[in-house]
Length: 379
Image (cartoon, rainbow, N blue to C red):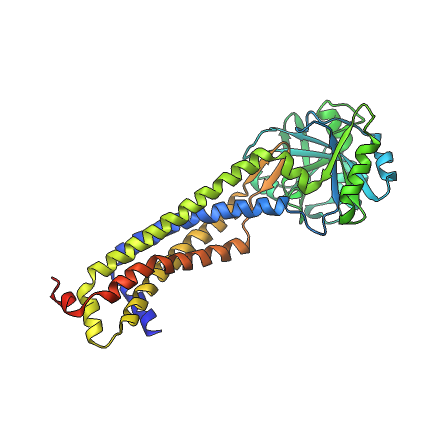
C-alpha cells in the first residue's frame, strides 16, 4: 500500500507529463470501447439462443423490403402449419436499403394483433389505445424517438409517409426500439404497394428446436406458388441479410487492436521516460533499503495507475457518448442499435489494467537492474 501511495505521488509530481499520457490512453481506450460496443451489439442481434422462437418468412431471392412482396392471404395457411403458434403479416418501408447510419423503418401490422403477438412491448409514453383509434398513428421505439427528438403528439414524415406519434415504446428486442409501428392498411396505401400485399410474415413456433423443421414446412407449402418463400430464424435472417453491415463492423476489430497497440506503446514509453529521468532517485531509494523487487513494483504501479486513469476516462466517455447519441446502423431494412453494455465497461477496465501492467514490465526490470553506484554518479 505504501508503494502504491508513493507511485501516486510520483505521478502527481509531474502533472503535465502524466496528464498528456492519460489523455493519450483515453483516446485509445475510447476507440477500443466504441469498437467493442459495436461488436457486442452485433453479437446480441445475431447470436441465436434457446429462447428464440421467431421465423421470418420472406420472398425467395429477395432482400430489400421494396422487392419482397407476398400475398396477405398466406396468413391462414401459415397458421394451420403444425408447430406454428402465431403468425403476423408485416409491411416494411425504409428510406434506405443500403448500409446507413440513419435508417427510418416503418412496420405496418394489423392493429388488433400487435399486443397479442408482441406482448413484451411497453408503451411508456402515450397510449396503445390512442394508436389503435388513429389510422395514421405510430408507436415509435425509444431509440428512434431519442435520435429524432420526437415526442407524443408530434407529426413525423419520411419516405412519403406522414404519421402522428401516438406512443413511445421500449422492448427487450433491439429491433423494436428502432422502428415505427403503424397500421398495416395505412402503410399499404401510403407506400402504394396496394392492399393485400405484405413484405414478410413473422412466425412464432412452439419451441426453439422446431425452427428448422417448421421453416422447411413453410417453404415446401408455398414452393409451387407464384410467390415462393424463404424462411429463416429471425437472427439468422438478420445475419444473412445485413452482410454489408456485418462486414463493416467486422473490419472495426482491426481498429480496436490498433488502439490497444497504441495504448501499450504510449504507456510503455511514458513509464520508460520516467525511469530514465529518475535514475538518481531510484538509487537513493535502494540505498535507504528498498529492494530491487520494491523498485520494480513501484514502477509497475505507476504504469497501472496511468493505464487505469486513462482507461476509465476513455471507456466511460464512450459509454456516455453512445447512450447520448443513440446510434443505429441499418441495412436492407434491418436496424442495429449500438447500445453500450456493462460487460463492455468491465472488459475495457480489465484491458486498461492489463495494458498498464504489461507496458510497465520492461521499464520496471530496467529500473531494478541499474547498479546503485552507477546511478548515484549519473548527473
